[in-house]
Image (cartoon, rainbow over all chains, first blue to last red; front, side, top):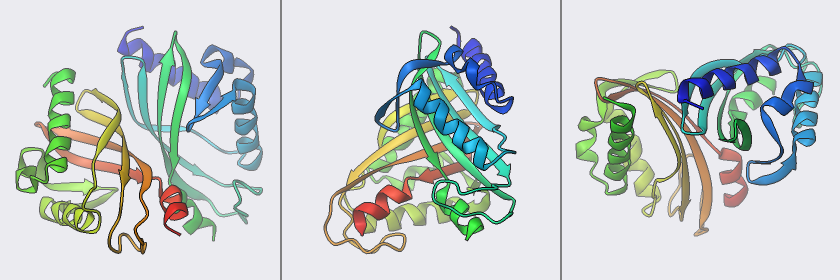
Length: 129
Length: 129
């Protein structure tokens, strides 16, 4: 996969998330992966996404910066959304918030096998408190 | 600058930080830049680095993942260090800590003109409290 193909493939993965086609995750994510250093299954990865969109129905992954090279993708994703239910320990009450995620992925054979993600949790906490 | 040249150039910038050659920052950073959405001068950028290494003398920027393409660099930097003095509101007392930074840079004419950085502040807080 060339760098351009990897970028296109990653954007398709993001579209898959935004269109809530979580049954298609198998096209983009290995059965087993590592997330922030911890082994997990794709089903667990999918379950977390399901929880995220249940708490934040308008969650939209907006790619701000994307760098793809040699099986590695780095992405700054921007979110502007309105959490409706408890989410990651926060208790929203209808505020629209915005925050960034900086995330890196290692691909193997065209699928994600490792993820390192940082959320701007300070920004979230400031807006939800 | 090709992607390979950009990667080499960025690694030279990291070496410049690790060797504390902060007077050389002008080779890598524009006079004026934006840092997490806020305009600042290279002198202010340098001053923050000086404060960081004053508080954390053994601060070492260890590149874990690096993606460079088309004037954009994404990097996951890993730190293992022993803060000695107050730093970013934390009051260390001799613990060695480890944490990551996920940072993106936009270059223009071979120099950084914009930075978006997220530190794993939860990990830092957990280890320093």
